[in-house]
Each structure stands twice: as structure tokens, then as C-alpha cells.
Image 1: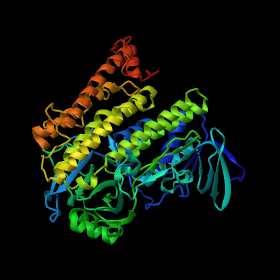
Image 2 (image 1 turned 45 degrees about the vertical axis):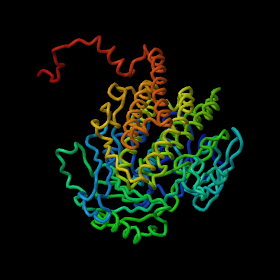
Image 3 (image 1 turned 30 degrees about the vertical axis):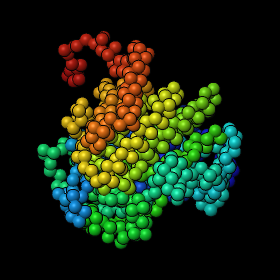
Image 4 (image 1 turned 135 degrees about the horizontal axis):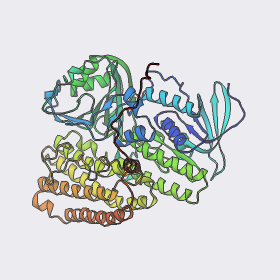
Length: 593
């Protein structure tokens, strides 16, 4: 039984889902002797049906979970691998019974950074147990109220645990309780879709979507693919995240367990195309699949149904992420937009590290703690706005194989070229770089909006500009593959903060985007579109950013000229200088007496 006397903690985390358990572990790994409490109404032993949307990671989240949380072996031993993303469009919407009825963009090789699918219930249960072993206290109860006192004043969280009301005192409070919006509703902090259909960031760029999904076990995966593709790919198609497209919607197919074979199959639908009341039950969802993606319908019916979920309103954002009053919103309590690129857990990775550094600096009473809080709040608000932008006009473009293939290649170039090294190098925690990022991303955001407008225009005109494969390097003029990277930060293990050359990556990314944009203009709009003032304006912007990156790279190279790419490697190289080969074994058998 819990004591009714107030318990005092450095941090109280409301919610023990993916975001909450990861934040608790990250705090304890990085701040010695920190006192952390987690609150969640669900029991520690989560049921099989305790599942939520978001079972797939991308490189940012994988690096966070495996490297920063030290869970690499755990993930390999308990969760399924993810071999990138495959994309499928019906050739004829009336014929969708097998793979031959679709156009495909297949992952053709192993990814440079390994990633995972995950069973959310298993992950949350196991990491919560690890956190308790590290010293975190878990309260299996429901939050009744939270007193968000101003500034550094102690906060109070009122919790009902096993029928008793208790109070927890905390210097910092984190809302990771998802769509309960404990802090969001108390502070009027949550931004939902506006019914006027506004296109600004405060209106989620017009994003108005919902989601239905099922999980099934013991499926016949050969209905999808027999696993034999010796000339097309060097990786598994089944253990990729498979995306299936149609007008106003896309579906995911994610393996969430290996034994038994278990799949999560779900749809993100845009309300202006597919109303909620046409897909919000298992029967309606099944009927939708039977008519539009019969292959997925057959896969579901080959197995045993575990559960069905429907979420009518998926997207939302927050006005503030990290308050000067020492409260923070994280995970779904902060924002979610669309599962298309599986960005949710990566946004959590950026946010978790920001929150830990703010709390560490404040507990240590560092002079720049508030400066960090303000800068990280602005950075992450801009970052989630940029993620929100990824889904702008999806309702108009998803079903168009030509348009979406070009859009995916465009967005992949930014992700692999800039965002992965930005995260890996911890540049999001570097105050001067954060200001640089904020300075330039507004102009880049306007350019991305312009590209989305042009893609929609081509779609409305019914233009086919070909099929651009993001995994190939023989379609763009400079033989660039969007999934490649400009720097050798992976090959040379530049994993320490700011050791990877973000300026070289920025420079090369902007150059690759400029090449993509030039080819897009030529194929989509011809010489007139290529030479239009606005097109030239954005081409010049990209070239200017190439020059900017090159200029700052010179300073970066000068400042880091004496730093090794990796300190451990440098130490090994120093140690080996004293090495001398000795052609003799140590004795291991005692001579007979």
C-alpha cells in the first residue's frame, strides 16, 4: 500500500507508454541519482490488446533506443527488424488481388542504420521493468489533477492509487499520457484541426485524418510474397514496412511479432475523401479492404483477429512543448500528425534528449538553463511543424503513383541527407546550430510548400512525369541516391556530439535537392516552368544554401582540425603503437609432478 504522505521527486512522468518509459530511462542514464516517478493506470503486465498506432521506427528512433538507451541487444532479441519502406500503388483499382496488380518501389538492400518494428505492449512492459530496477518508482494509478505552479515552485500531482488519493511533489512534471492531454487541456495548449480548413501551421496545414487498424496472428505471409527475389533485392520484403496507396488514403502492413506471425494492418484516411462513418467499424474496414486492397483483405482473413481500433481524429499539435514553469508535453500528449514516415518515435527522440538536457541544467542550476529551455522549445516546435508539413496535400496526391514517387524521393533526400546526421551528431542540442537551423528552415519551408503546390497542380492536370525510385542512384543527373549520405560519419564512427560534419551534409543535401528540383521542373513544366521567376528564385535559394554550407564547413573543419573522428578509435590507435607481437602462448597445463 502506498503512503498518503506526499512523496517528493525530481521528475514525475504522467504516462508509462513508449514516450514515458523512454524519457525515464534517458533521465536516469544521464543524470546521476535523479529521483523519477512514473504514473499510469494500466498494470505493469500489459495485455495483448494494449496496442496503439505507431509500431514502426525509422533511423532516428532506432539510434535513440539502441544507442542512447542502450537497448540494442534487447531490440534484436525481442522485436522484428525493419528493412526500410516499400510502396505499392494499384495498376487498376478494381484489380488488387495479388502483388502483380500493383506498381512497386521496393527496398533493394539492407539499410545503413538498422531499424525495428516493435510490439508496443511488450516494449513498454519490459522497459518499465528495467526502469524500476534502475530506481524509478511506478504508481499504478490515475492522475486526478496537477498543480502547475509558476517557475521553479514545486508542482503537485494528485493520483488515485488502489482507491486511495495520494500526492506526489515534483520539481518537473512531464505529460506523456497521450490523448488524455492532462497538461494540454489544463493550459489550453493543444491545437486540433480547424473546421475552416485553414492551411497555416496552426491549422495543421489542413490535415484532417483518422485511422482504423487491426492486428492478426498466424497469417499466411506467402499471400504477400514467397520470400524469393534473387535479382531484385538483398533484403526481406516482408520485414519492411509496406505502404499501400489509393485515393485519399494509405495503408500500412507491419510485422509486430515473429512467433506467432503477427501483422498490424491499418489505414490513414482523409475525411474529405473517406468519411469516418464509412470505415469506423471492423465490418466497414473489412469491406473497404475487400473493394480497394483485396490482397490485404485476404491476408487478414488468413489469420486470427486479435483486435480492431478506430481513431476518428489523428492529428494535433501543441503551442508550447517545454514551459518556463517546468512542465513538458511529450509523445502523443504533444503532437502527432500521420504515421506515413513513422516519424512519431523520432520526434520523441529529439524531444526526450531536449527535456533531459533542460532538466539536467536546471537541477545543476546552470546559468544558461533557461536559454536552453527556450531554444529547445523553439527548435522542437519548428521541427514538429516541419514534420506536419510532410503530410500537406496528401489527400490530393497519395493515389497518384507518379506524383507520390517524386514526392517520396524529395522527402527522403532531406531525411537521409540532413536530419539523420543532425540527430546523430546531437546538433539539436547545440545552441548556436539551433539558431542557424531556425534561421534557414523558414525559407526552406516556403520552398517545400511551393513544391507541394506544384505536385498538386501536376496531379490536377493528370500529368505523368514518370516513376522515381528513392532507392536507385541512376535516375538523377548526379547519380545520387536519396537514401545515401554525403559524409563518412557512419563509416568512421563519428558518433560523439558534433563530430559528424553537419555543414557538409547540409551543403550536399541542398545540391541534391536542387538537382531533383531542376529535373522535376523540366519534366513537369518544360522550359517555361524551368525559367519562370519563381522557379529560378528557389533554384538560386538552394544554390545560396549550398554556398552557405560550404562557407561554414571551412570554419567547422578549422575548429575540429585537432579532434579525432572518434575518441575511442584514437585511443586504440595510440595504444597499438606500443604493441609488440610475441609468438608464444601462455602455459595452460601444469607439468606433472
